[in-house]
Image (tube, rainbow, N blue to C red; front, side, top):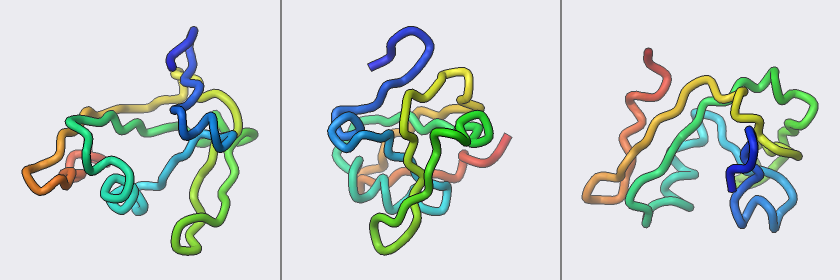
Length: 100
């Protein structure tokens, strides 16, 4: 999925025509709904200004507006990333995100 210096999306992203993203406040529910069965995941903080022309907020789950990226995610727009593993109940500890 990584080609050159960009991320082109997951299988689901390619099927839907955009890269699915979440805001920090949406992240817990997104992880619970879509990533509860993973051994580990990588969360990336993305500079939305670098992607402003490709980024659209659209109504999705629960009537909330989610960020969708219509195009490739340039790796240079990743500000920071974290690799997380779920606890024994399948939940991710997001307390390290948003801290320096």
